[in-house]
Length: 359
Image (cartoon, rainbow, N blue to C red; front, side):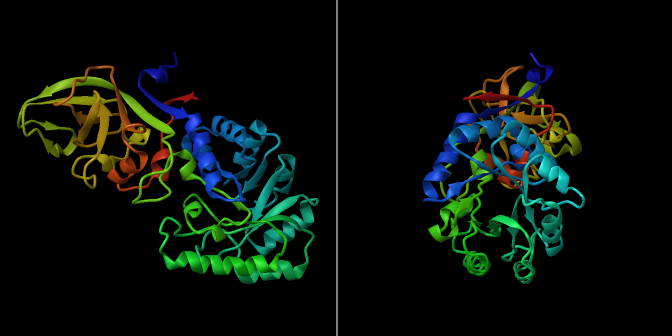
C-alpha cells in the first residue's frame, strides 16, 4: 500500500468520464467532440484520462503547454494535439518532434511557423471578445493577406459567457467568429467549450472542446447537472474528540461549541487543496463533508493539514473516510462553499492524495 493511501485519496471514475464525453457528443450534432486535457487533465491524471477518452472515441485533444503535449503524445501516439499557448520562441523543433499543433496567437508566430514549421499543421486562434491569448481580427486579416505557407487545419476562438445562455455577448462572439470564418473558407472551426454544448447548434461548428464538463462540473449552472461525478476526494478521520459546550475549535477561536459536541479531525487541509474559505464563518453558506453516512458541517478554520468537522449527530470513528466532494457532495457545491469554481478545486488537489482509477 502506498503511504498516501493511509491518509487521503482521490477516486477517479473513468466510466463516468467516458459517459460524460459521450453525452456531450450526443449534444454536438455532427461536430467532432475533442477534450481539453490541460493541467494534468484538470488535476485527475493526464495519462489515465486521455486513454479513457480515446477508448470513448475522442481523437482531438487540447493542452496549454508544449510539455503537456509531449507527455500526451507519449500516451496517445495517434491523437491530434493542439497547444493553446501558441508557438513558444525557438521551440518549433520541439513541436515538430512531438507532432504538436500550435494554436498561433499572433502574426509573428504565424510568420515563424511558416519559416520553421516544415509544412506541419497549425491552428489560428482569433479573439472574438474575451481578450485572452489570441490574435485580433485585424491581425488575422494580415495573416490571410500575407499568404504565408501555413497548413491551417483549425480556426478557433473562445467563449466568455457560455454558461449564461441569455447573455447577449454569446451572440456577439458568434457573429465576430463568423466574420473570421469567412476569411478562411473550408477551414474547420472550433468555438464551443463545455457550456457551449448547451447553446444553439450554430455554436458547435466543426469541433467542440469541452473541459470541466468532462470531469463532472456542471455546464448548466442553476440547472440539474447533466454530467456524472468523476472525482471523489476523501481523507481519513485522524481523531474524534469530545468538545464540551463553550469550548472553541481551531485557530483564532472562530467556532464555539453551542452544545456538548463531537468533532472529527480530518487529515486534509489547504496544502491538499481544501480551500481555507471552507472554514466556518468564511464559507458562503457553510461547507460540509460526507462522513458517517451523512453530511456534517466543517467547523473552525481549515488549517494546513487538517479540517475539523462537527460529527455530533453522526457515528464516526478514527480511520473513517470523509468526502469533501464527489458522489455525495457535488463538486460545484463544494466549490461554491469555498467561494470559488470547480476548475480551481480540481486543479488544486495536492500531491499527497493517492489517485485511484476505477471503471
